[in-house]
Image (tube, rainbow, N blue to C red; front, side):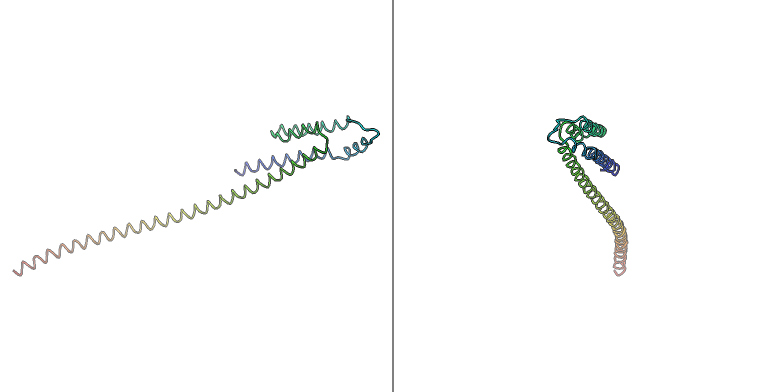
Length: 176
């Protein structure tokens, strides 16, 4: 994963968290609490309030727009649940989604740190092997020169031995 991809994922994750926070703010605003307090009278129990429906529609529309923008099916599911379910389940779903996003963020950070450490380790090992290769190459060149020098010395000594044998033969012929 490149740094650019990492930054893009972090930005997307942050925008998702902001969208979820905005939806939670709409659902937990003072107006929503006042509405709940006013409508929660057992004597005047209503099945649905138009203001409540408007808030649900607003929250659902906000979540659906963000889900469509980022192509996130979890947010789309949450938007659908906002339309149909009670706010307590939606709030729980939002809290669960925030917890999941934070967990994913922590996992991604851990994975990025692991990748960075592995990359650095690999780079150090590569540099070490390159230095070792240069040292071995220098040693091979040194040994090749030594072999050549010793080969030249051997050839010189063979020539001297041949010359001495010729002189020994002449000296033996001169005695006779």
